[in-house]
Length: 136
Image (cartoon, rainbow, N blue to C red; front, side, top):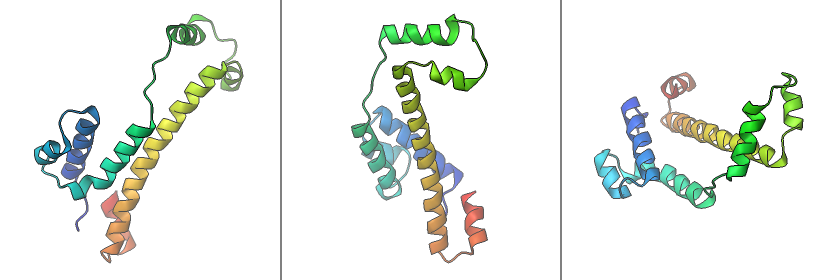
């Protein structure tokens, strides 16, 4: 097994983006990007699980107006972020938390991918320095 090349990484990322957007069926995308299902199976499974778990929501017009007024409409009393967090409404705190969770999940996904590459490199009996150099 060889380390993923930049070209292959780009094809996998493009395939997943098209798969998530519903551009074409997975079989068609695999042919288009010249990839096997084995190469993307774990990522497709994770994508499907996230799609089934996360629910798309749209904020109400009242919430958007309130957020706009909070962020733009009034002059800040202090520049201290802690005072701003305390004055946020519970709905805004939940929205900020969801954004933070989403960002954390993305970072964990990328980190997990790099760790898998490192594990595969180590399984090929490479020295740790060679394995780290290939992941980087």
